[in-house]
Amino acid sequence: MHRAEAWLKRYGRPLEAARWDFLFRGGSAERVLHYLSAFQNEDGGFGHGLEPDFWLPASSPMATWMAGQILVEVQAAAGESMVKSMLDYLIQTPQVQPGMWASVLPGNNQYPHAPWWHWQEDAQEIWMFNPSVELAALLLRWSPEGSVGARLGWESLKRAVPRVMQAASMERHELSNYRKCVSLLAPHKERFNILMEHSLDEVRQKLDALTRFVIDKDVCNWDKGYKALPLDFIQSPYDPLYHEFRELVHENLRFYLAQRTEDGLWGITWSWVDFPEDFAVARRYWQGILAVERYKVLKAFEEDLG
Image 1 (spheres, rainbow, N blue to C red):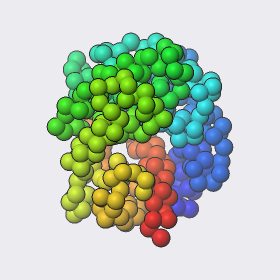
Image 2 (cartoon, helix red, strand yellow):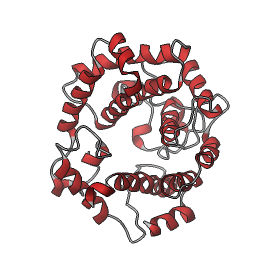
Image 3 (cartoon, rainbow, N blue to C red):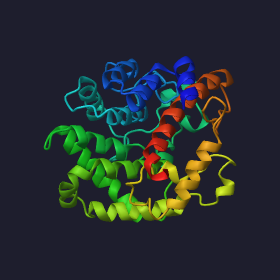
Image 4 (cartoon, rainbow, N blue to C red):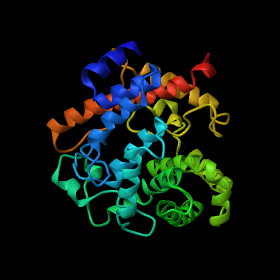
């Protein structure tokens, strides 16, 4: 972990270095916000390669979602100017389908990007409520009840909830969005149960069932590509699925530890077809992000593992 920290501060982005200090060294949230602000545009949305697999400088809902996760991580308050500007961006950005902000923008194609971020006419049919269902929850987290932001959040969820309740399966990233959405909505459980056709507990149970299906349970297969691992979904001992998957989660923790490089980092299991020079930069950025995310998970299970 000490070697990973040294690498991150030498070669990673200042944003991930600040997040590392916040999570593991008692660093300030203000420093994280300072470096995150470099990715925010005047319209309140985020861009500029915050998500390193697409380098669109203009604001996008996807990059704004990634910023929202960091703002949740540092427990940013509703009155924080960065948060208020972000909510304004979401309120003012038209949805491409009811309940859905555009997951991929045509502008992506003009800048270095991974193939899965290439815009095409049917892009939204592929991405669906990734990340819109989580953006709706972020609106509700920071918007006063009855405000324009809160109403938009609830209206979006009214479109998103039927999809998950009717789904026989779900792509792993969209599923993760739904799970994080439900977690963020815990303080709004009573209101959710009044406004939606299904209770928050019913939605959570359905998400657990879909998660059981998507997790790759073949441990021997985990090093053969980009797999949906238990720790992609179960990120603390307090997760409702933890006790059911405890042994598999522990296998995943050991797998993470065994896969580290000499620098205490992890390799990237994906690549771009085009823009090889730009991908070399994106890969380094992703190594820093993965270091922060995975050591955060390892820390969450520290006491449980003993």
